[in-house]
Length: 507
Image 1 (tube, helix red, strand yellow):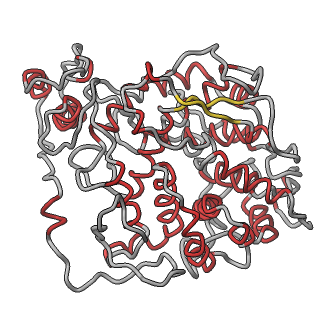
Image 2 (cartoon, helix red, strand yellow):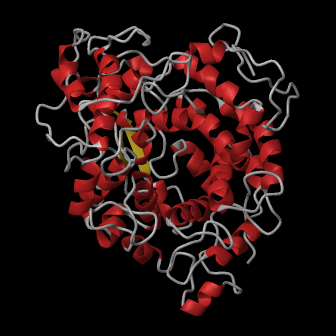
Image 3 (cartoon, one colour):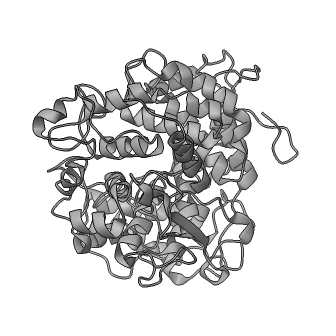
């Protein structure tokens, strides 16, 4: 890989030097330096009492330009002290110095709004390193190899890097993961799974070459998806595996990007339930996953979760225009209430569940729900020239910007859950995705580049940068816009779909 920002890369993992070397896992080197561990932030003691939260406001003066909302605990607090309130107070004690710009572990410079700059070069360097070899301790991630590729490529793309130059390495890494019976496993010799297939397809889309697209065996993929289709409308994530909204979303992404036939394969057992198409009963299945709180669970009858909410809403937005599909299958007032409760003050970030702590990754999983709901509420698009303005912002963009830039940037590069946590590729990818979502208005138009009308509305999305008076970040901190459904650049999603439209599919 090239040097970054004119300086020698501080490689944390040894890497292979072959130009087309697969992105494989290597054994941990015998000599492990202690410098990285010594440089990591010391994790604060999470023990706390409710009185600690009340003392936070008397700490060091905040950086000029920081509103009071982000410098002190909420003025109204429940007097009941529980383990949950203690954990929340401990989280506040970690976040407030970063939000106020008074932490010694924080990099600047700070702008007039009191927000630190995006450490772009550090994050680019971290992500390039994440695409190299891993120590032996990462063997637990062996079934997540396509995800590790996706997180690295997506993060680099968001930061403005051209990942097409590594397309041969990506192809060499992903090719052994494809099974002749259809789909991609987490690694060579592993069974096919919808989550790893989703990550593999999106990674191939981002490098964007014809040989990357040609790698996918669409016929086998279609047959495999037919075996995953269930009699209640949903999808299993693998043969014999669990059924949940992840499967519904990942399957819909794959079907729409690869332009697969909607007809069920003749041997699909779902035909015995009266289904003819891969999407039959899917909206109704997702509707049953909405909980009594208003959020969306992984499967009917269990706890609502922010990541499942995104999967369900994005899946519905693939099936048709959000103003039709989301409005039909979801109780919107309840869903809006539950999602709104996920953003906390003073942190500004999102939690994934009721009575849980903020976590940087939900900047995407919850933050990504808002443009989809915005489109559902705005209604039918009027033209391709500009977004509708019938509904204002449904969440605090400023709050999320402050949480990400102040609390989620690790001083050694990469992004994290919250202060006191280590950076990792997963959080780096999804925190940056959430930051990108705050920096752009996403909206649907009345036109689509697709010749095939199946899922064509999913490719009618456009984006517009937020205006300067809306922003608390600097112009140099703006990221690439990602498609709100496919979580890759708009152009990458369109290019893959159009390439497959031009390739005949023999059923």
